[in-house]
Image (cartoon, rainbow over all chains, first blue to last red; front, side, top):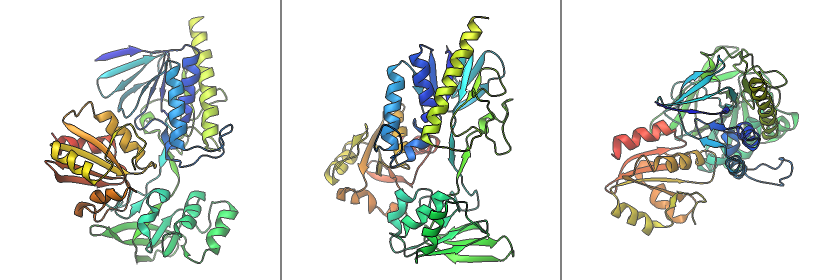
Length: 312
Length: 114
């Protein structure tokens, strides 16, 4: 088994992890970023970013590429699309096993694991992914020209994307589990005023059915218990995000009931030398800018932690 | 009309048939520069070293020549980008719609293009 030692290991290569990587590597700390997927994280999934200060307009992909280049230019090692098969972060010497055959050790770890789109996890969802079920309106909207679709969700992205999907679809039904929407008032108003949009409230989908493609959904009214079916060409599932903290379940890192990492103002968790940054930690606002701020704070706190460790 | 990735691109139908004629194992990912497609290109880039026997290519979905992928019978029911097609001796052996994980892609490569 191959072993390599670093000063800091960052788990997650989204804007929080990359920013921490830039700060740490620039401060001459030997730093490694590990990501189980693509570098850039959810930022890559954003077509256009127009509110990142200092840059008038860019794509999430472009911003990720630049941040990655910056981190690398300062000497940060980056590994993407890896599997984390072991995580020991309770003690002073922390060890992360990758792909069962490489062990990386460091006295400090930054957890910047981010989040991912929430799935419904109901029968047929995996089977019809890409055959009627989509999680990205901007990617797949044009496959639904003159077709009938459902948008599941009640937040800003669900309502805004439902409106944008009316450019293609003949009819859009918003299906939501509560009796009211969590979205901003202007988004709700726009959806309600759109003649192509209908609503099914207080209901959830219980099954997806079809042959080669999705053809039908079964849904249940949560108030009355009545089960109905609806013929449909497509379903867009836009029900928010879940934090990527499954890997922490067997560790002593404290999580909220929503599985978000709890960290203090210096972004240190309940474990010494373990910091949290970005969307996977408990916080109110999740933006690229707030992730970048988290990455900065976690990196500076980790540097202080390393300094104190050496002077002990 | 090509994608802005660091993979080798297929620019037209002729190039597509050339790649299939000259290589036993070919994986083509046909998509755009969008959130469901970029992770697949990224994974393909990384797998090139692990699967030297496979030719990894991408193709822009909006290129009119991408009809060679879009009109495949195997892609008839596809409604999610990217369309990813695996060829063995010029024949389609597997095709997927929408984003796939590294595990899913590796499994197909091991199963079909080894």
